Length: 454
Image (cartoon, rainbow, N blue to C red; front, side):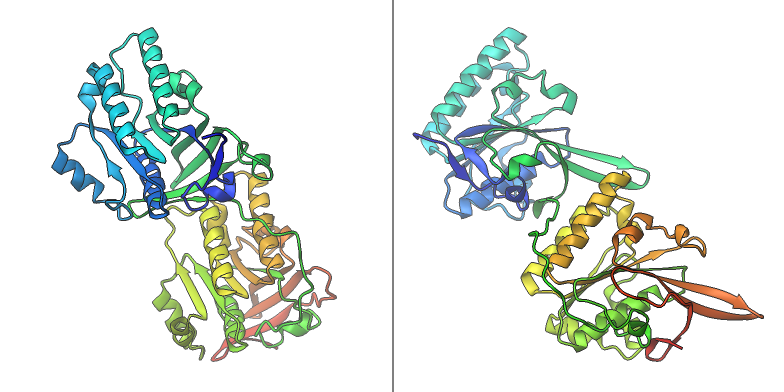
C-alpha cells in the first residue's frame, strides 16, 4: 500500500469524533477488565466484515473451543463473517515465540484488512523487560507487513499505559474507563493519541472525554451534539395552554426553548403534555423524554385530559422515551433526541425532569456547555423544546436547574400559594427573551382539559 487510507471506525458515534481511522495502523484499546474493550473490538470487526472487509479475530483465551464459541455467541452482532483463530493464553505467557509464529502464519493465511489481537498484554509475561521489548518490536514489524488496520486490546490502567512497550509502538491509543459518583455510574471514552486526525475532528477529539454505552448488542460512543451554525427565522406557534400565549404577546417562536419550574404537584408534566398535544394536533412529530413514568402511565394520564397519545404513538408521530433513574447520561439522551430529529423530522421535544440529566454532569462549566450545545442544536433545527424541573422554594433562585434558567429563552414558574385559608395555583413568566411579556402572577386551574389561566 503506497499511502494511508481513511477507513470508517464502524462504531456508532466514533466517526463523528475522529473522522475515521488511517490504515494501515496499530491502535491500542486500553482499560481495566469489564469496560468493554472486547465488545468494542468485535463490533468493529463485525461491522467491517458486513461492509466487505476481510477480518480476523485472534483471542488469547484459557477456554476450550466449545466454551469459547458459547462466549462469542453472546455478542448478538457477531456472525461467521469474522474469522476467529484462538491462541492459548498459558502458551502465550510461557512460550511467546511459538505464539508469534502461530500469529504470523494465520495473518499470512487470512491476509485481513482489519485484525484484532485480544488481549495483547499477557504475551511474553514471563520475559525479562529487554526480551519482552524485543519480542514486541518483532510482532510490530510482522503486523505492519500485513498492511492491516490492527486493533490491540490491553488490560492497562491509565497510569500504566506509558510504561507498556505497546503504547510506544501504537499509532493510536483509546482508553476506556468506568467510574461511579454517589449513586451514578458512568463510562468514558478518551483518545490519548491518534495518527492522522484532520480538522475539524482534530480540534477537540484529544482534549475531551466522551460517554459511551456497552452491552452484548451494541457499543456506542456519544459525541457532543453540535448545530450547523445556521439558525433560521422561526414562525409563531401555539403552546396549547389557554391564556399563556397572551402572556408572551402571542410570540412563541418555533425553535424556542422553555423551562417550566415548579414544586411537586404544580402541574409541570401536564403543562408539557399539553404543549406536546398541541403540536400533535397541528401535525408535528414530537418526542417526550421522561424519567418518572412509564409509557402506559403517560398514555393514561394524558387520556384523563382528553389527549389520545396512543393514536399518535401508533402512527409514529409521538415517540416516548421512558427510562428510570439508573445510569443517566446527558450525552446519551442528547444523542437519542438528535437521532429522532434527524430520522423523523421532530418539531417538538419535552424533557420531563431536566435536573436528573444534570446530575450526570457535576462540573458547572461542562454542564453549561452541554446545555448550550443541546438548546442550540434544537434551535438550529427549528425544534421547540420544553424542559421541566423542580423547585425547592418560591424564589427563582430555588430552581434546581439554575444553569438552565439562564440559557433557556423562556422561564415559567408554577407556584402553590395559600391565601385566606384557600390554596391557589399561580403562574409567572419570569423571562421571555426578546418578547414583551406579562410578569403578573396569573392564577391557573388544572381541569378536564388541562391547564387554563384565568
